[in-house]
Length: 528
Ligand code: SGN
Ligand code: CA
Picture 1: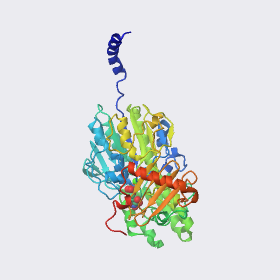
Picture 2 (picture 1 turned 60 degrees about the horizontal axis):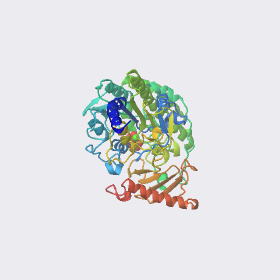
Picture 3 (picture 1 turned 90 degrees about the vertical axis):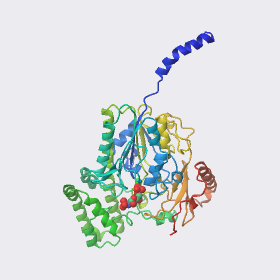
Picture 4 (picture 1 turned 120 degrees about the vertical axis):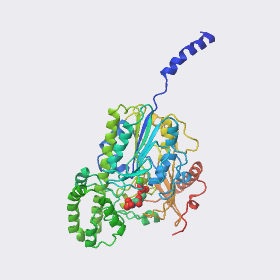
C-alpha cells in the first residue's frame, strides 16, 4: 500500500475508531467520609473489634489501602485538604479554629465547571456557605446526634431523626432527584463516630451487651517517648468525660463525688440526651440505666485498672455502636446504586477525616503523627476500572483525593494542587509512587494538649519534631516497633538512618513548599 492510499484508508476508518473509542461516560462520584473512624473499627482491616459488613463489601469489590494517611490529623483541616488538594499551611485552615477561605479553588468547583452536579451533605465543620456545590445540607460545627440542626442551602432547620440516618436519607434523596443528563459528585459526610458517641436506638442493646478486646497498650506508661506523649490529655482513665462520654448521669456523679467531673461534662450529657424525644429517652434509659446502676454499686471498690477497663468498654460500646449506623448507611447506598443501575459507573470512596485511638496507648482522640491517628481507612470501588479485591500499602494521603477524583473525571488538576492522582496505582503502576509523606499539626495550646509537631513517614521509619514549648525529636523504626513505643532518635544503631531521615525531611519540606520553618509559622498570639 503506498502512502497516499494508506492516508486515504486512515482518514476513512478514523471516524470509526473515534466512535469505537469514544470516551467512557464520566463516572459519578460518591465520596463517603465519616468523622474519627479509626481503621481498627472497619472489619476489612482485620482487627476483630466489630463487624462492618457493608464497608467490607466495598473492600471486597474494590481496593483497600493499608497505609493511607492524613496530612494533619484534625477534622476541619482534613476537610480543607480534601477540597483543595493542598497542605494546611498553604490552604490556610491549619486547625479547627482558623477561618477557611471558601473563595479559593476546590475540586468540587472544578467538577461543577466541567459539567458535574455537586452536593455536600453532613458534616463539614467550617463556617460560611460552602462553595462549589449545587446543593448543601450541612451540620453546624460538630453537629448533633439526635434531632439535629442542618443548614440546607444556607437556611437553618431542625430535622427529626438520627443524624447518621438523616445524612444517608438526604444523600440518596439528592441522587434520586438529580438531573440524569449530567454526572454527579456527592460528598456524603457522616458526623459519626465523633465524640460524644450516641448510637442509634436500634443498636444500643446489642453494642452495650458485648465485651471488646483490649489493645495491648491500654496501660501504656509513655516511657520510651518524649514529653508530648506524656503530657497529652486524652487518656481514657484520666481525661475522658464521665457524664458526656461515659453517659453516667450527672446526679449519680454528684452522689459518687467524682472530683474530675466538670461542669461542661454535665452540660454535654444534658444537651446531648436532652435532644431526644420522651419516647427516645425512655428507650435509651431502658438500656443505659441498668448499666449505670451496676456502676454505682461497684464504683467505690474499683481499682484504677478495673476503672480503666470499665471505661474502655463503655467507650467501645458507644463508639462502635455509632459506627454500626454508618455501616448501615453504606449498605443502603450500595443497594440504592445497584437498584438504579448506577453501581458500575459510580466511584465510591470510603474514608474518615483522620484515624482515632481506640484505647491504644490508653488514649482516645487523634492529633498525633503516631500511626493510629495518622492513618485513616481508605477503600475505593469503581468496577468499570478498579479490579476487585486489591490491597495496597502505598503511601497515599488525603492530599491526593482532589487530583485523583479529577483524574477519574477526565479533568486536568491545577498545577498548584500538591497531591497526586493515585489512579495509576490502582491499575498496577506502582513504580513511581512517593516514598515519603509529610505531616503538620498546629492546634496547641488547645483541648487534649497535643504539642505542635511536623514530620515525615517512609515505609519503614518516622521522624517527628515537637516544637513551640519543647524542642524534641522522635524517630521510630516501624518494622521493629510497630506500636511506636521506643524513640530511637539517640540510639547509636540509628545514627545513619537519623541523618538520612533529616535530609529527607528537608527535601520533603522543600517539595511541599514548607521551607519557612513551621516553628515560626502560625503561632498563637500569646505563649503559654
Ligand atoms: C471536640 C471534642 C474533642 C475533639 C475536638 C475536635 N470534644 O472539641 O474531643 O478533639 O472536638 O474533633 S467534645 O467533648 O466537644 O466532643 S474534630 O474531629 O472535630 O477535629
Ligand atoms: Ca474528626
